[in-house]
Length: 258
Length: 160
Ligand SMILES: Cc1cc2nc3c(=O)[nH]c(=O)nc-3n(C[C@H](O)[C@H](O)[C@H](O)COP(=O)(O)OP(=O)(O)OC[C@H]3O[C@@H](n4cnc5c(N)ncnc54)[C@H](O)[C@@H]3O)c2cc1C
Ligand code: FES
Ligand code: FES
Image 1 (tube, rainbow over the protein chains, first blue to last red):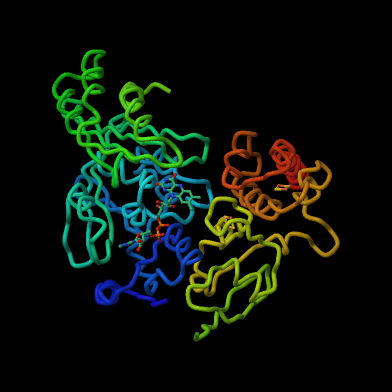
Image 2 (cartoon, protein in one colour):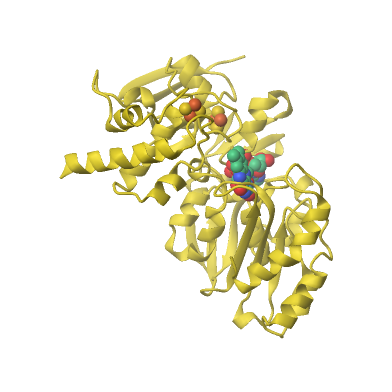
């Protein structure tokens, strides 16, 4: 394990073939199961990584901020239901926002909401990257993510639904986030566990554009919501099943039905 | 492989051990510190049998890097009883048959201890949520939930 106390040194350390340790809920699993496959662990103790602070018209969430911290923070109330949907209480005390960005299928529920919010990913070298771009190159990306910027979310503007086999702790069959800023005139929709990374459902967004949430517009969005998604078979559900139920769950997410 | 010295507080006792690179906290507690109360169930974060409190907060010790707890405080089930006097949670588990094989019990007790410290009068739903990361293959959970509520009532009575 290499301990890094500030960002000025962390970028170099990361370059040297290391794995950045967040809460360790995925990385330590791998260490336990196949230690030889894990490069040197790099643990960053810089307190900036654990901070949540206002920035511009939104908030900066440090990469090391845990799901429990998100739930407890009054300014992030809109994201609390998303964080609460991840694992059990002990896991949420460990699982970080930064680690969630890199979590493979079927994980990454928090990132689904970040994608709908068009969050920005901040790197230690100063780059700010649109989250959609980040996700498209994620699996080959190198470097240290220091935080994520999210816009201020008006009450009721973020809708989220996680579909799982067991409650309260199951893994996603799919998760859906819909962000409806400005009264919903330009909605943004993201799906999790419906492809290798969380993905935007842009055809569904277009179907809703400027129409508001009506019976007709939501049906139209459901009819095209699979465009751009690529669900896979796994132990939880087949790709066929995921495709069949996606429009139903999109409707429930948009309409706030249970 | 080089060993790293690690010092922390374990149930009020200053503790010093040596750990391997990448060693998890569960192994460090069991093998290094000789505290066998946290259990190894899965090593993957799914069962909760390894739950310990770090600075009062529940963590899955199997997924915690041991070196990350340097200087911090660890609470495990081994520190619950005071001598021969069982902790009210342990007593309620015993009296309510909330432990059968007992393998999940240390994790349940730690999750319950953290819950009652933060929320001394939890509702049934809050108890269920608090132990939702802990699997039990024996009891069907009902006796565990009831025992935690009983212990909460006893502790409240004592505080009043
Ligand atoms: C029992 C269980 C249940 C789970 N349930 C869910 C669930 O319901 N939903 C869900 O989304 N996930 C779930 N997960 C997966 C995981 O816990 C979460 O995705 C979590 O947010 C991952 O964060 P972490 O901090 O633990 O990541 P880590 O394991 O520390 O890291 C994961 C990856 O991200 C990289 N990384 C971490 N931080 C940085 C950084 N700052 N810069 C660059 N790279 C970084 C690491 O190198 C690693 O490759 C579950 C896991 C378990 C064990
Ligand atoms: S052994 Fe840690 S969660 Fe199962
Ligand atoms: S008592 Fe046997 S697993 Fe819970």
